[in-house]
Image 1 (cartoon, one colour):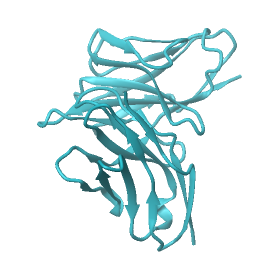
Image 2 (cartoon, one colour; image 1 turned 90 degrees about the vertical axis):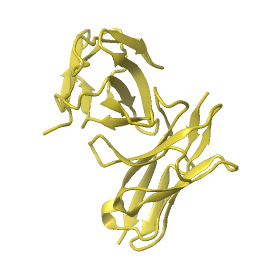
Image 3 (cartoon, chains in turn yellow, green; image 1 turned 180 degrees about the vertical axis):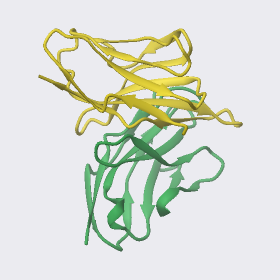
Image 4 (cartoon, helix red, strand yellow; image 1 turned 45 degrees about the vertical axis):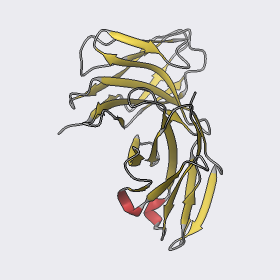
Length: 115
Length: 113
């Protein structure tokens, strides 16, 4: 069963704690993305990676870190430096078609709550 | 630079009525445009995309969108709303064939019986 999986579905963070959100895809997509979604603000890009062992900051990278050691995995760590981490986090991966045009597909999301 | 404006954060229609969700974009290069739908506590699902092949794009669930360059618009329509269409809809633009998307703030669609 192909697709993008995110775990856990819900995650609770205590003050000063780092937490890691998992994103895995078995679609053989090259690029992967992390977005943060807050009510009324749409999706904002945190980090993205277009190839293994390389990634770039998005618009709101402060307080977050990522790694891309394997093509199928792109974990996101929310560090203690992120002062307002409560949000819905969405991972996406993308494929480039024969016309060299990219389409992003999304995982089911992880909701992060602060205790 | 690319950006998207979705007019109307909430739209309400009766079941069977026309659905019209508005999206205007700004792009310094020919845009690639997308509509996604999100049901509560789920990820985004691709509805349709404009890739310059045709200005009228048909998507899933009976939705379609028309690219109008002169109006910099890519409005989403459906002739007859169904209760199952109630969700949040996002318009997005990419300024190149590869790379990041820029999303609008979303429009919440409510369908009344």
